[in-house]
Image 1 (cartoon, rainbow, N blue to C red):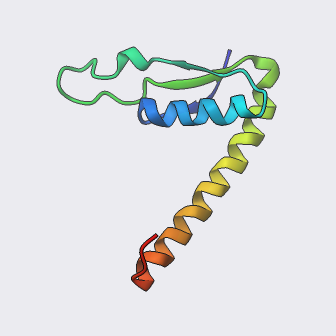
Image 2: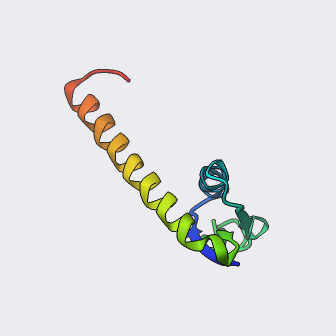
Image 3: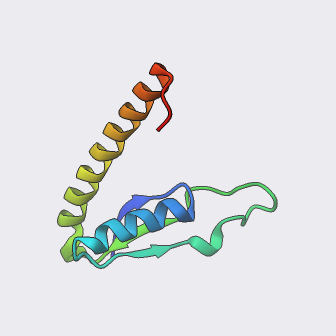
Length: 87
């Protein structure tokens, strides 16, 4: 298994997992149960999305495209906010 993404929370991890699976890439979320493992403090860096090694390159391409779309969406939302419009 090859780590393709380190998530900040379970929701983030599952969004990535579903994006990969939508492209036919088997993906697995590991480390979800470790959240909150440091008492009441949020423990980060434990949740990973992994794929079989044979799919690692394809997963990297999907995630690169997904991140570009996320950045573009953030820019549009920022422009809307600056214009005083609601989305």
